[in-house]
Image 1 (cartoon, rainbow, N blue to C red):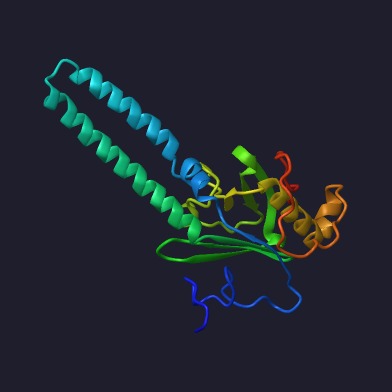
Image 2 (cartoon, helix red, strand yellow):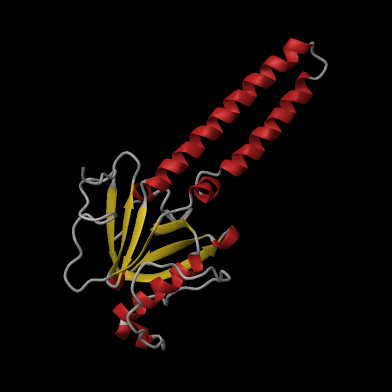
Length: 229
């Protein structure tokens, strides 16, 4: 029996068609679903909010007889827990169905829980990248696009830089070892854009060493590629 995966239409995981001859796969990865739940679906903030609301409700009902106090609190606690559970499940599905791919020519984002969308972002059309660190070496890498082409924010979410509505930025969300991935993207960009790198005084990089073993975790730092003119 042949192996089965969820995206049978893909020529390879995360790729709608085989890589052209000469294009090399450098890295693939997916979001950490717990960090995605915290930072994209705001589960932690909502848990704090629901806890505060339960405390306010308890103070309001204080002095009521047992059942009149406990039943409303129990109902509210169940509804809050159900909401948090649904958001956590959505984050898990979003992480499970997402695959980011870096080659020496482009970044491919396969995203979408119900309707799958595959975005091909050529490195020559990426104007810059910025790392937003999170806990334990996780982080977001937001990509700014050169030129006039734009991708709708709603098509990207949650794989978009938060609140960048006018000029949406595709983002690789909640990546483990995000700083190391950012360095790989930077090296691939420099190799693909030697003339642009020279204009801003950065040496063109040698081709990025091949695939997919992640380097050991290192301290996360803010870094990015130069913005293209």
